[in-house]
Image 1 (tube, rainbow, N blue to C red):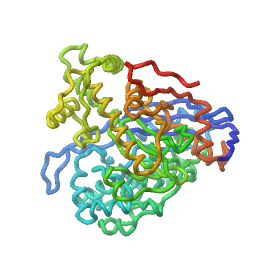
Image 2: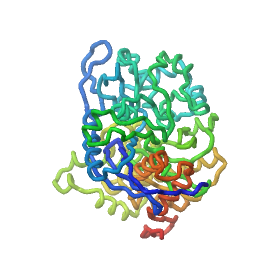
Image 3: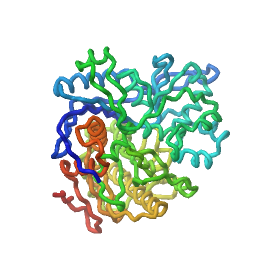
Image 4: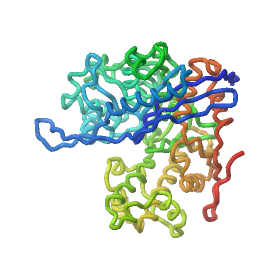
Length: 505
């Protein structure tokens, strides 16, 4: 482990999540890394009427408002540079799998949202050419119906892909707009189902077998690579010096988040908890056996060539969709405005056993009435559904914790490791009940925090790349900076009623 020699300085992190985005200024010195949030903005999908193949009207497509996000990002960067003129780098991360299609550098349309239903046809098309077992052996990727490979197959079948000469994943699209450099960062490329986890390169043979043009995909770069200075027009618009550079980070938000998980040994696991829950281990090489495929694991790229061996488990999406459903259906003003904090308190007070459902069931992926879907799952499986809102919230959190525990048991079995500590980072680290239930069901000590792990990881990769910390610093050294400046909350397994969490010193 190298020693960090932090010199002091600032970078700007653009962190685009599936429900919201933010622009953050990160400052790094010998005492650690600190964040200043300068802009937050919503990221809501847009439903647009479309035609089915053959010209039949009636389909509603779900898209991202990429142009609105760009406007929010540039407004945030303008404020960041006004607040901190000494920013020396910008880095962009986002959710995975989705992409923008371009021709001659111009965006052809609003990128599809991964929850758009069109990708189901893409699954059938891909598996007709490459069986699931072979696809996993080649890419190491957990089967999710919205993986990039399936979305591209669907777009090819409907002709959407025909005009495009470039596909850029969301963070790479924003970096293209910022710099004019078309590149795909490897950690996010590893989520596409088109990258070899062994070579770290595009699987050109697989791409051709699927009828895709290898030229559609941009050259690959590693986290820490300079993508060049801002376009002059962008620099002028945001008030930046023309020399300000954009640095590739772990552009898959979970890759950045794992950089900031303060792990100190091989007995630690992580849960990056937000809209999704990414549950797993950090390994030095992928596990590509059929047992890993059967268990639903994925081998995604991490910073510094590490492997994020994990499973995607549904996350706080279940809770947020339930809150939306209740807000729409409340029979009184009090019911419609019932806040999450109140419901979490009521859920913690539930004493009778509640149903535990399969939080990985694909029925919970699309938007919709989540409480009704939970009730339907319970009825189909001869399980008593939760009664009322408090029990539904408790059921969701118990089910998530149970899914985390089952996933970590599989991870131990497949990797040969023993997990004693579970780090929960991201928004879910603030959910005391979820963290305590995770400790209870895993039997492990849970360390909750930092909340802003993704932004911290983004900042640290930039800081190392531009020399604000020693360029030879290991991930362990970067994590030590996080541990030095960000306290965690400790939860231990218990059999008694919910106890107050202990804050680490």
